[in-house]
Length: 367
Image (cartoon, rainbow, N blue to C red):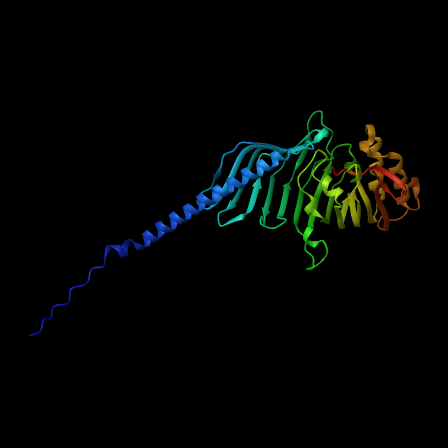
């Protein structure tokens, strides 16, 4: 006689029920350990870089708060911060924060939520407010990292006693840097950096040269160039961060871009620009200009309407405007429809900017 009762079921061990939770806890503990180690590495790197700057003569003032953001972020919230170079140039922010993903600690995004103050050495302070001020940096293990800076709808206001700032506001200001893209083996490619600069819908300060140049309209500039021998940009002295670079043969090469100033516009090209021993820009820019007369005439008007003309030479600007106007029509205005293309040459030499044979203004100072 056989036993027809069913065989008793085997009871599963309770360990099997808890195994997934145990694995999750182990992974959670491992990730937390990784995050703590990574945050300490970031904090140590920041302290090392700050110490190096201070040893080189820079001033770094900040509220040290350490790294937060567990579990998936690395966040540095310094509160108020100020960084000043030995040259006297400085940047300060009442609130500054930087963060990165713990999964990608090589890419950082920095935000100045309450604006910036730019110190221009002897020229004084300029307060910058904007809808957004942010910068991203990635590729920190590269020789030259990728950098992107954006100011959305910035407004510039020089403080009392400071020299006026050329711009009053803009739609957007952008600056991008990356390692130079060139065919393998190109001479100097590994020591160069590509730069792209955009100023969109810039508005000059009232009565200033940019307002005159843009004929009370908007100024838009887009230019790209290559910083040759960028490896020489290191450290800083009282002359500025670009002084050693310039002494070692650094230059801006392969410059090209476009500019629109009110009703005037131009394409610009230059094989190379550098700086003289006083830090003034030297070199030649070729311009294919359309309707340049209004811009130059506005520059003349702005230079005559203020003391010193903001550095603009009114006689030189007036002569350049007359030469750019072409055959005169009624009351000395250009006789054509303003759409013909004119080839002009802008030369920086002897500390001044020249349009053809006519001196316009002091050449831009790099340091």
